[in-house]
Length: 403
Ligand SMILES: Cc1ncc(COP(=O)(O)O)c(C=O)c1O
Image (cartoon, rainbow, N blue to C red; front, side, top):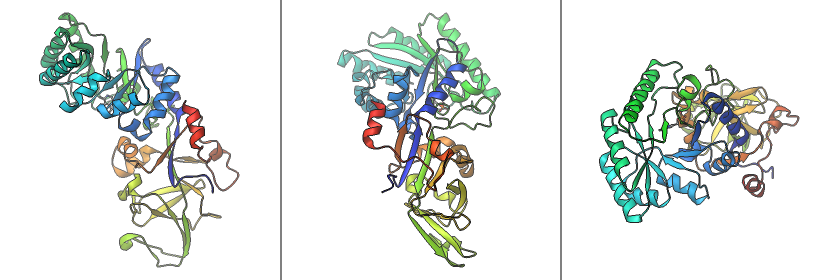
């Protein structure tokens, strides 16, 4: 046994702490950080991350996508403030109120339903109003938002905890549209204050606004991508972020093949010369998208090896004919660093013409998330043997790390 999984994601908790430090250095004094941890912390595995950042007082709250994600945190004993950033459906009302989960409410009917549920349970429900300043997704425009805020304030069973907006394109450095949205939000804030609506927390900035704009001036920022180090480090302001996720697998099978050997479904690739083909136990079910067939490379012992042929549900093949001493069991890196080489999640996203968010949230259930407290590259950097990664820790070791 070499102690490795078939396919795993090393999650570097120390990198997340570092990135939160970068974020903190960009926000105003006393400003709070909400870690956006929806979609299982963008595929990084939410519970160990939540415990880690809370144990270090690095965040004040969590932002989630729906009531199930909120409940998952509560069931893991996380009693920090949680805000559902999206919209909920009626069936979620009971759970939200019962578990003291704050919710963005976008319509009068939702507010009235939450009020009824809060009265029924005899517990107040905390509401945030999301005003649409240009995102065009959820939330009313300013006039209606003002009306909703007033209704919440007037209700015996609701508490107006926050007022927010969401930037649509803040990762485009210095985008004038982000500045326009910020101005609209500030105007809305002034109107609320002028009409005497008390609002404890104003929040707008997501990662792009924190890093690239002066958008972090409010009481709280809601950051995901920057915390997980998923932003292109070539952008000014993002240079010092550290990627938290590395995706790895190991060679499960090796075969020397003659020229003219077809590889995988539909013979999309045929070997032009005698070579050696390694089979890796990672496929599109794990998040290695079919569209990368014949178009992408992985790192084998710190060197690039091209994916050849169609990626299948559970496997892909790489040509390692140019690499010396490759053996079954050798670690392959699909995202992350191995020696001098690095494949980033933004590289993947660019190759797929998508966004990094889709890459990490698309990692499948079989990908074992292994949360490490220290930077998880030491054995890669000082690799003296062929196998280049630190073996994953045992379950007991990991449990001890997060407890
Ligand atoms: C409402 C809201 N706020 C904040 C964020 C965090 O965005 P980012 O990951 O770019 O920081 C998201 C993420 O999609 C969101 O939906």
